[in-house]
Amino acid sequence: MLTVFLQTLPFFAVIVLGYGAGKTGFFPPEATAWLTRFVFYFALSAMLFGFSASMSLGDIFEPRAAAAYLLGCAVVYLIALAVAFARRRPLPEAVMEAHTAIIGNTGFLGVPMLVLLLGPQAAGTVLLVLAIDLIVFSSLLTIIITLAREGRISPDLPRVIAIGLAKNPMVVAMAAGLLWSATGLPLPGFVAATTTLLGAAATPGALFAIGASLSGNRAERLNVAGWLSAAKLVLHPLAVGAAAFWIFDVDPFAAGVLICAAALPVAGNVYILAQHYGVCVARVSAAILLSTAASVLTLPVIIARFAG
Image 1: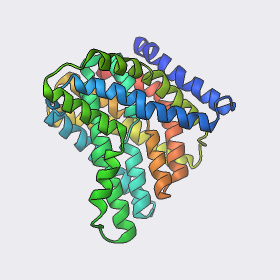
Image 2: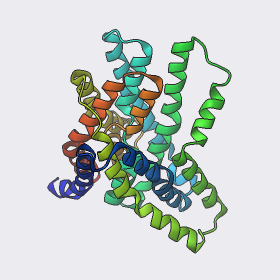
Image 3: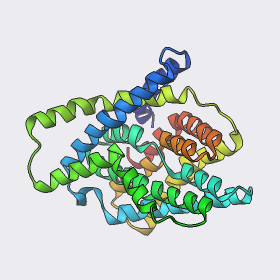
Image 4: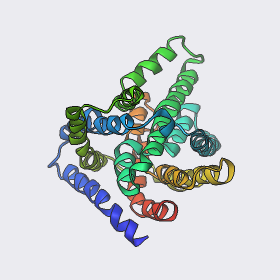
């Protein structure tokens, strides 16, 4: 485990550097926003396109792995909902807490860290997790909150969801890569070189942006944030692991990657959604901060146990 901890330490060190730069004002919020935009639209998207262009849909969508991840997420989702309802929280708040308990920072942390640590063979499973998070659960959150607030499903909702997915550069990059892969042609040399060059900026840029963005978060509502962090870092990988090993008999390596992806801290884009809907903003912000800090210790343990 010490070896894995030392391997993950540089990733978290860059996050800490970004946090320090943001906290001291050396890297102001405007700079963080622009760096995040560069990573989101260019560097990380180039990395995802490069991965997807070298795979087939079958390399990413493995039915048993997808079913195991979905079931594990569903179990934790329902537990988080039950806890929120037991505290007499309204449906929009309960759904946002449940979303927080299962959506990890797969894009900005999981893709660069897990693929580098576990090898290129982990990329397909990590992309599967990312696709399910972005397409299934983000859509589910939108549907439930809209239903809770308006009392009905608007005929425009499918169009709104489709437009939202089409505007997400990570979804577009993966789809474009898979479409190119389906042609059977190799990427032209200059395209491959460009995606490699841009993709190389994804890891340090994403990690620094995570840290800088966390510097503006405050650890408020610690009881609920602590519970959501524990659900994300402990319950989520446990549920996904149980489904992968005991129910769906997923390939051991793929199962290990699923568990490691499930053990990632709460994603920053959950905060963006909380702000957009005006729901649980302080709780989500605190959960992102606490889970990211705690994952320095929890993530190496899980990687060493299940994928080391």
